[in-house]
Image 1 (cartoon, helix red, strand yellow):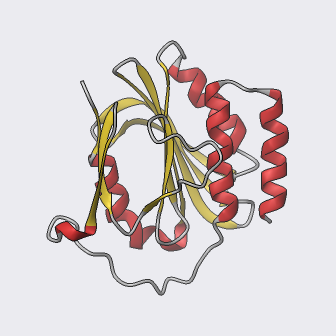
Image 2 (cartoon, rainbow, N blue to C red):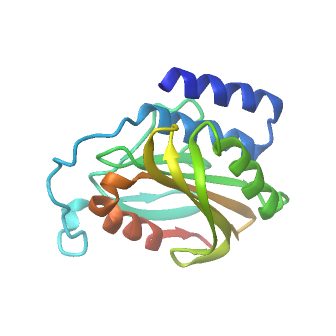
Length: 196
């Protein structure tokens, strides 16, 4: 399953090497590496009540607090701690953050990313427009359908402008685990802050 997805995404990426397009392979790769797991993980810890369950990132352009059960994928070939990184859930979902030059048009970034992911990463059955992600206003879409053609789930693609960058967010989740990670996703959305 994963080799087919990676090969399909690689072929697509060779045709378009824009920064937004370069962000998509990591999303597809994370999706390919993720296989649905049983919902036997321990219950979520309330991160507001237990500081030991919170991890913090403070980098040149942003800060982020997130549940410590999520891990940064530092092994991804396009990982860049300051410009392109992915947080992976204890299950199979992830959020990818990519800071792109502000000269790029948000609508083009969103459109290019959807083209790269719709098919290889998700077979879209419905598409809903997004205007907010956490505390950020911008534009994007919530795609719902089948992850890698088989597993019910969704992908949120969102772009907002801040501090000389267009910030591209890609969230991917599997429906059977969404209930268990919804609190984590909300916490991450609320605690990603661009610096002035």
